[in-house]
Amino acid sequence: MMFAQITDIPKMAGQLSGQSDRFLFIAAILVIVIGGVGVIRYLVKQNEKAGKVLESIAVAQNETTGRLAVIIDRNTCALEENTTTIQRSNDLREQQLRKL
Image 1: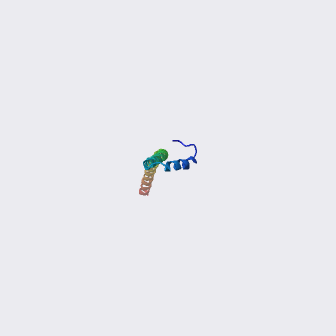
Image 2: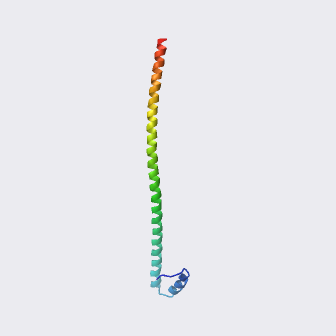
């Protein structure tokens, strides 16, 4: 039972109002089921969109985490080199002070 235009709905409702209560009950159940299916389909599409967005966010976060790990590693190496250099400098300074 397809209708061509939205203006056919009031005509159809008028015809259905003359039917028996059992027919109206079945029609109401069908309307509720069809509406429910429409809502569920809409929610599934929204969920899929949100899933794709979350997936892209997770990929970007993983890339950023990898870059951050490299930066932290480089900073750790640089700090170790600076610590070694400072220790050598302090040792040389102590040796020079002992000679005086």
